[in-house]
Length: 437
Ligand code: PMP
Image 1 (cartoon, rainbow, N blue to C red):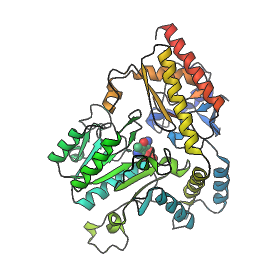
Image 2: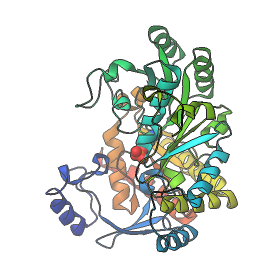
Image 3: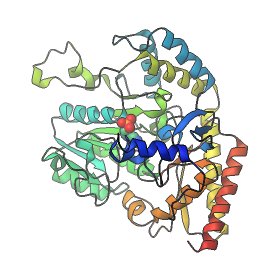
Image 4: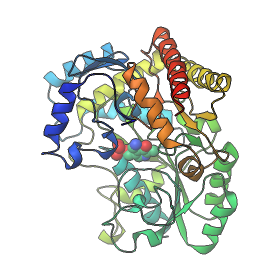
């Protein structure tokens, strides 16, 4: 078995076996499954995780890319412990949540109001609904291969072939109102605008599930102009890029003001989070006292666990570190170092590969048979099993990646750990070459 991890993890193996009697396939989230079995993690601190068998790994998965500060960052832990003693959640407004919301709005100058959700999935679901409701137009455009969470609307065109619904059980007709375009293809977007009455366009500036392909700045500008001209809302899904790439997220980097921004992951400091932010006028009909007939009222955000003080506290503490410490510079330069050194290693060893990613994120793609300018190319024209094999062997050497997925450095990742990763990467490449894999 090519994918067999060499590191002994009998405890994880046993727990996984037991988990197959509890969870479908032994996991509560499909992407967390990998061969031969997932690792059961017992604790995490700094840049490392420790499994139940006592193995330590430098972590490049970082809780689905949420933990830019690394694990158990001291000021975050302290703040959360203090809050826990005052109650986990009240289900009422609270000042911590308000302060947290203000901080988030400061980061998105185009946004005047926000609503919290408990996940990125809900954030994008409500954003799309808000776009339809405020424009009165039912059709939504999304990027091919864009993963915005599992809501019915946005579950189409996630995996190639992109022209069909990609999961079973969606309400009939859903995909008739959601249409996918390849990123960086202006003509394709224009065609869709010509064919359908489009109320909103949702896009990630960098597609995480698309292996890190990025929208070109010109393409994002085009989307901004086109949505304005056609009276549609432009939604930037910054669940991944938000609070990661710069204090103003990706939109500040490219100087574009979307109508709506969805955020999640990093903002919650490791606890469940999501939300949507935008101009005040877009939320008028979402107010509890909106003076509109019920069918005009808009449901935007909310839920039992929204604005809970634990997430708000972890989020605030995290955003404070992002403001006071050189986190962006550090993670960007570490990320750049990994990307460029990996590329050099591949080049020196004659390995046909390209490394994608931005700021803290990095992902190699082997044997690209086309320019990686959209997700279709990543999905159909690269050797994904080579990537999984590469990651498996890095895990054996103590560098944890979710096999086949993007990696990221954190603020607590050390230079020595990165050098180790690069050295192991070179070793793995040599080993694979020697085996003729
Ligand atoms: N949007 C993007 C861009 C994402 O990457 C994800 C999750 N990976 C989501 C939305 C959904 O977020 P959540 O998993 O918190 O529901």
